[in-house]
Length: 445
Image 1 (cartoon, rainbow, N blue to C red):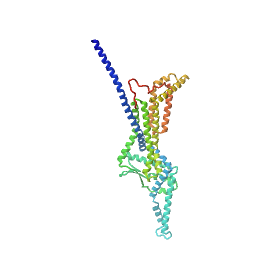
Image 2: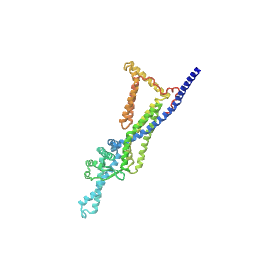
Image 3: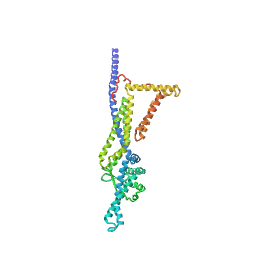
Image 4: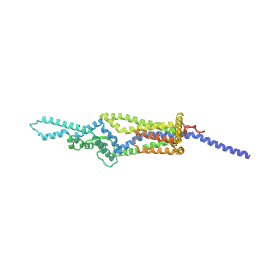
């Protein structure tokens, strides 16, 4: 009887153990699926935020950093289309301020009194028209000469710097100046800033009347803003978002890769998603070029608007291309580290090559025989150093460029190659090894 009870207890214990093991086996696939779903959501969200981060970072820098703003628009001063357009606008403002007809008329009234029999009134009127036209032609000639001179970029940069500085002051509520927001919500630029900057150059170009140009009271309406408060809130929001969203995007993608049960596939998915979202941004920028020209209509020549648009969005376009390239690199890395037979062959061939190179170095006593074992134990340190360097570059290098990404990738690849050769890499423990008994491999990220 005692034996039966002990046997029964043993069987119950064995049954409980088997039940627990079966429970673990049955819940493993479910946990893997949940982790895959969470990883996918995090990666997709991070990839979607990446191009948004590029745009907000660019906008925040352009809005708040005067030197960055000047650097972006400075090349426009050397474009013939922009020079011609600006010349027309500046000449028009000067003509309006001088009023050649009135000025010449006043001069003729002084030289030729009314009712003068020597110079009939008809001749005086015709002479006034001719002289006024000559003044206009002189203004146009002088402005065109200045606009195409080597000194114009300096004048242009100075005007941009003055305007943007006042814009920042306006948005931060520290006063106003040439750039103001009216009560009706119009953002206006007083052309006196540009005209005052051009006066010395006009005098040097031979237009003596430039020194007599009175204060220009003409304004250009740049935009309509519903209210100063809303504009300042938007300014603050954009500058803040530009600083935070890129880091949030990076954190989400990193979290998705960390959560995923198959990290190589997660890296590949992140790369593919980044290629899609950044490619969409680049496509949108190209479409926007034509849309802007249509919206402006006759307000600005299409060629001029496209040149200005390209100058303003050039940095964003370059950053979008850089993100696409980063996505391609990530996709390739994820596929090489994956479970496919081709990826396994690539890793095996690389391991054999690195091992042969290491043995040759050790045999020639160029590398100590202790180095491989030390590096095998400290591989995580090398990976950590690369990650830290990447984060530092991400934080300090703005804007992202294709050349910057390529240089960083080449340096990282060379460093990894040197490390792998010194380490004498064995055949890598493939992520594609058979799933452990009782565990189902995760088929999604």
